[in-house]
Length: 345
Image (cartoon, rainbow, N blue to C red):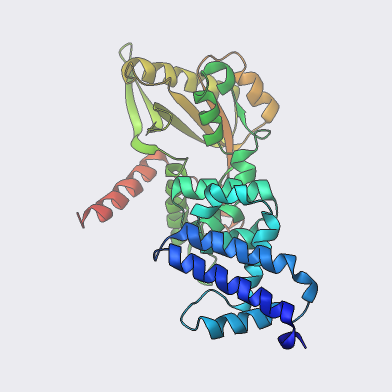
């Protein structure tokens, strides 16, 4: 019987010592020690997996007997530890983002991501953006890695219109498509509520273009040669150290859109850009984009522009799919959000 097996008790004792050692070194809340401990336990279990069925169950019970006031050593969690050690079989990865993530985040990644490279990418993005576990899961379910990390789907001229490393940072910021998919299907939801939630989701998506984006204004006035022009949305990115113009189009991409956006970028560079700022970047969001046409349209433009699609939720009724709020509606929502948040200050 496994309980009377001397080698089993040696394994149990080894894990007990690992737990004790970590408890001695760790201060409450030191996440890195916990993650490293869990990896070590997982590695030990993985190496002794020859015991088969019942092994992990016995470990969980006996660890609980030895450490009755400690949590985190259930059968389910021990299996997560084994999986964690199996995915990352070298200790080096634990010295970077993985050991700084909470175990709760790592569990979500183990459940949702099968590819090691994607796992590490989401771990880095979680730390970079301060995502909660729920936000992380939401980003995974919206395929953020495929939309933002993979460059094949991105149409832009950043490589020849921006110096390095800003060109790489700008490219990494761009997504395709932008997904406006935050509407919960409810039995008696009415058209007005769906429009409201579309607006709220679009604001969240646009404002979350990436790290460092700060909202600057809507239909921002640019006076050029005695004429007035208005850009849909204007941002400043503290990481890229530049202004970002976002233009929203409810139809299919047309080459003339790129020319107009190029003009806006020149105007912003002339009227707003400080000498220490980097060149202004443009993002053109269209409901539909022909990749080849967009590439040709950007080929000889010297201002940095990216062209992406946006998608609405599949749950939205067909008659509302084309409903994209105007920049004015987005502005009202933004200011309402800021006023609510400001009440407590």
